[in-house]
Structure formats: C-alpha cells, structure tokens
Image (cartoon, rainbow, N blue to C red; front, side):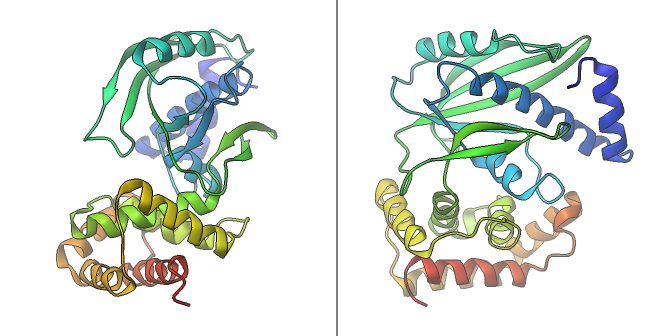
Length: 282
C-alpha cells in the first residue's frame, strides 16, 4: 500500500510516461479508490451503488477509458444534504493505513446540469502536501434491472480488489443507450458513444440479452421515453451522418489516445446493433 506522496508520484510518473493530463487522471482515480475502500468498510456499504464513469473505467481498464468522478445511487435512506453530510463525514473518517485524509469542501443539490440529478459533494483528498479535488454525485430512485451486483473493484497499484455494490452491465448499457437516443444530435458527450462500443468489446463478462431488453424497457419507462424501432433507427442515422457529431468525435480522438484508432462509423455500427438487440429486433 502507498503511504507517501513520493511513492504515489513515482508510480504515476512511470505509468503516465510524461503525460501531465494522464498523471492527473491517475492521481484522482487513486484518491477515488481511497474513498471507495472507506465506503466498502463502512456501515453504509449496502446503501451506495456505484455507477457512471468510475464503474465503466473499472470494467474496461484505465488504458481504454478514464474518469475523475464518482457516481453512485443511494438506497434505503433519505437523500438530503443534511443526511448525506453526516454519512460522508462518517465514511471519510474511517482510518486506513494509506496516509490519506479527506474533507468536504462543498455539498449541494444538483438538477438539470447533471446526468443524475441529486446531490453533489465536492471533496478534497490530502496525502502529505498533495491536495486532490474529487467530485461525488449521488442520486436515488434509479431503476436497476434486474438488480445491483457485488462488484470486485480492482485497485490500480495493489494486487487486490475491494467489494462494492454496483450497477449490473445490462443497466449500464441500457441507460447509455437511452441517453444517446433521447438526446440525439444534442448529445455532445462522445464518451457515451465510446462507452457503448468498449463495453461490448472489452468487458470480460458478457451481458444477457433478456436482461438488456428488460433494463432498456425499464429505463425508458422510468425516464418517460419510448422508441419505436423505426424512430430509433432514424435518430441513429441522423447522429451518424451529422458533420458536427463527426467533428466532435475527431476532437475526442485527439484528446484521448485510447479512441484514436476507432472510426466513428465503427462506433455507430456497434450502437445500432446494441439498440436492435435491446428492442428485440434481431
């Protein structure tokens, strides 16, 4: 286990190979792990369910996807700023032999600008003189189909895992697919498209088609959307043929090397195939 900022910086330097942005991502992901391990050892480990970018990155690996935030859903207790402040204070105070301490810098409600409306907690992780900001988004009432899973989260710098509750793969795919269809060409987040591709190709655990179809139907019902197969195909065709979307993908490729060799058309083929499977068109 890492105990000093020098140990962390040396490991990050070797992995990032001089890429400052990648180094920042690695440090923030390490601090995210320090939070998740505390959560896994807390009395609230059955109340928080991991989802979003942190889960996708864990599924596919840091070499093929990066994240710097934590998204979870809360169950079994009220989601309020006051309640969450108390819970996080207790979780963050759990002592581990990692030299890391946390404190909450801000906590507030989020709505329209967030993928998951709920509450956002801004944290600062400290390791000696190193200060690392983290963002934690918490929602509630999410539809997880058929159910959450016990996920073995592999640590970056240690040969071990921590056990946390997480979305099942089918719900991850269903939510991203619904987002792509409901937002169409208004969706400027290229990571949604990348994630749907990479989750179909680079995840060791295969998804169940029946569970995917059930998860997609449940997600659409929960979000108040509905797609006839023809409507979804039209949306995906518009996305595929949009010059603006193609340009956004090119920019995404330049920013993230893991997507540099992946053609826009290849990604769109994967999205359409998954959509057809989700609506039972295959």
